[in-house]
Length: 465
Image (cartoon, rainbow, N blue to C red; front, side, top):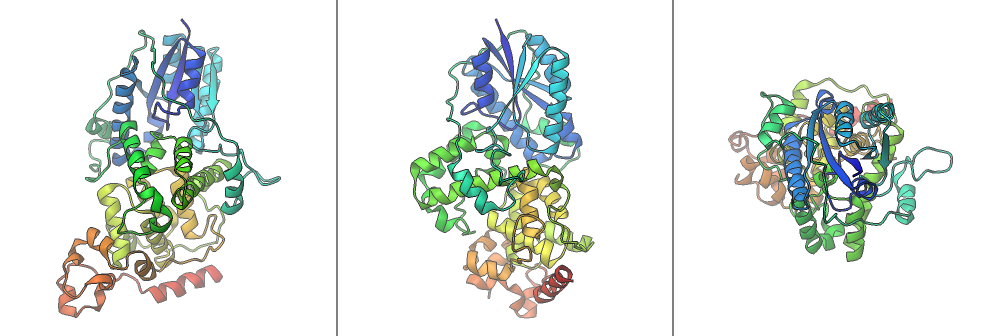
């Protein structure tokens, strides 16, 4: 009997999984392996919301494998050491893994390749598992990546893509390979984040491929058709909410694209464009790994060190209801509507003039879909240090509220102290400071922490100075 190892990373699914299917084609038996990586914990990327979601994903993956005659093999520790140990236990000649994107994953891949070669084994890396088009597959002339989205999208839309793969009917796993128990969400949060860490957000969605495919089917049947017209409507909540499933790989972006295009229509076209935007950021980070920490295009900003303002922003107490609604949604759900992310990010970096890295870190601490490529590069976009050609663009929270929450329904959902206040009907909820002083003081809601006009002048003075 021959054996191969399928190393799961951010591809925790059976449907359309090139890593698993390649390992099955090559060998009689496969070890579906996941390693709880100490390196991810030590780098600060293990946080309660993602740890709890990961626990759901692992339990669901194990159950799906068992229904096909297999099981998930789980280990914890150094990835390189654990993979080599499992490969030896199974006498596997090859290890299959999805291609890396981040600098950390790239270094891990290199170390694993070298260690396996020392043991006489081979690492086989599979592209287009986490993205539709592999990073680096599309380049503009002599450059190593696209820096502007529109020309990238034109190439992306017509680029060849692989065939969507079905889920295996059976999975045979060597009996001799041991596994740790799949932990509960509480146990995994404590193990990865420490016993004194914050509890996961109360509105966190359930993870796992089964739930992800249910969400995808509901999205296709309902809001997808109207996505082009309603994706920025904050109160409607008419986006896919599939971002965490894409981050953990419980859904394949290639399969999602194929299913959306099969549906067709303007909504599907607009949604597919968002998948391309995701790929765009992955190819930028793959070419410029240091953009996770450094300005992609420096503007020589003299960022303000203002801990009190940053903390008011984190807590959703800035005095600007739309900003605060988004930040409170993040605290409660571990997720935030994309339009609210843009508004909150612009407010921090341009109106408060606080370093984008402060915001990116807070988002990574809470977002269940916290993905280095998309989080960091979107923060750089909104801060004007990334791929936005209009790098001085400012998203005024009052203008954004008038356009995308005109009746104030989104704010009332997340800022309850304003929901039933007299005198704040309809869109008036976005300007609570206009209430008479006794009424405003009774709200337990702060006044604006910054004057928008003054903040605009300060920001533009720094950027043009």
